[in-house]
Amino acid sequence: MTYESNLSAVEQAGLPELYAFESGTDHERVTSWGRNLSFLGYRFQAVDIHRSGFSIDADFGAVQVTITAPITDLMAAHIANQPVEPISVKIYRALADDLSDFVVIFAGQIRRISARNGVASAVATTKAAVLDVIIPRVVYQSYCNHMVFDSGCGLTQEDYQVETTVDVDGSQMESADFAAFPDGYFTGGHVQIRNDMRMITKHEGGTINLHVPFDSRVASGASVKVFPGCDGSPSTCKNKFNNFEDGFQGCPYIPSKNQVVWGVA
Image (tube, rainbow, N blue to C red; front, top):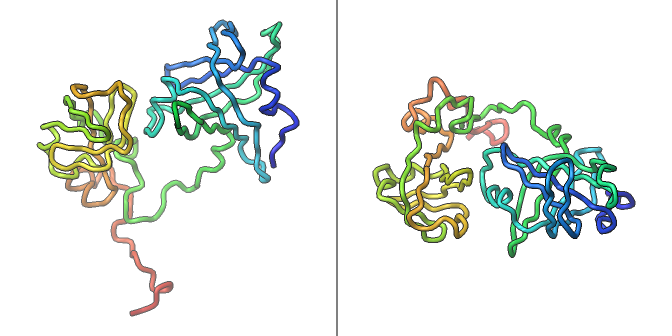
């Protein structure tokens, strides 16, 4: 069910709407108004930002809104990325002649961001989306339930980082340091430059391929941190990370074929 009669997108021009984005210690504050505004002690920069109407499903799930705006530094760091921290967003609506008279019309978290022609489209949901989490989170499977370097895995990411200087060619990065490791060692891992990260889809010799290239600010000669990936298999946990006894959470010997389903051969 979608309600457009109240707080709809077409009403945004008449009243200032102010957007506060936060990710860790990083903040960005913008407004859809035609000029910069001072609000709650902060400066909100005027940008060409728009939102959709608010929607809620028939089962009374999380409220969702789509925000469209020029790509900001905060959003750019999370596009096609594994964000270090999620982006929270709060949308205020105030009176043009008295900004102290305001209401919060949305508070939630950005779930995904896409970009096209220099414009970011971010889908945000309210905190009720946490109810969509599958419980239990641990399932019976032959592969590990943990992500490498998370609290359940227990390994320290910094112990495995490789810091090197790379040559950049689109979605490829090259370094002689990569060749010091067996092919595939970094596959499934990630490259980090400050808080910006990219997934590694392939590692062969001195070359790694990225899921999505970094922007033009990352060029040849850049210093990066590179981390290995884990496919979650028992052999990788044991032979690559020596962490099978302490960090593996899976059932490597669980039958992969159910005779009740597939029949007895």
